[in-house]
Length: 277
Image (cartoon, rainbow, N blue to C red; front, side, top):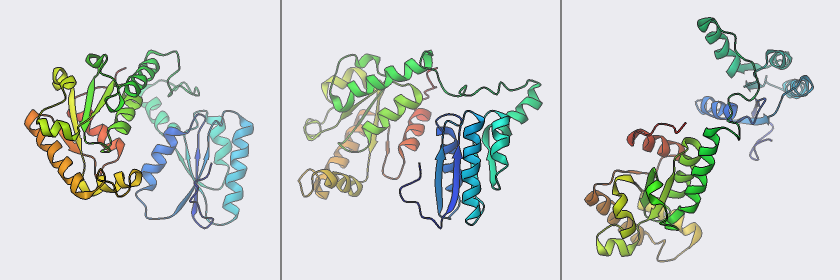
């Protein structure tokens, strides 16, 4: 599927995979972000036979005939399928074969060349851990449930709309962590103490904060011109939350300029979490 913001005059980038294309997409995004050039992405997943590889080659050739050579990011595992695609006149960046060949030479072992080995199977323990972690994070989103908080690997705290929910879900999905999240609200600030439900699990808490201006912008998208979204209230809540976290000895970071991926990686590093595999 093409990006909805694509334009015909942008350089075409094809992202090919024999699976979902998530790996190829992630690496393509990381590499292309280094170049201030407009790109038009074309994603073609599930290329698992010669017929589909040939169809992809034809699309690339057709695009190339219209102008500049396309750029191809590929995570195709099977050499015969890669060979079909490589016949297209394009800049080919093969992400699996390049490293698999180098490792084969170093290890003296031929790579399996099996489609789908990089993805977890539904019956695997790691996959089940991730699904269980997602369910846990959903059940314990925004302080909905206090049940089984002892099973949490981490409890995120912070003011409403500072990024706790998406960070919880990402940590569950990517790291298999049981993450609950709990809002800090004006009543907590007035009491000057953590919610009673969290006190037994203080060692599991990690805080998120955010610039008041950004928080006001986010809240206004949902409740425009409300007291909740006003800049004065946002400044007060953020200041009070940071004071409370500092007083309670809770480590925290600002989500203002960081992506969910960056926030999650920083938390995993600071809390010394390994992937639960």
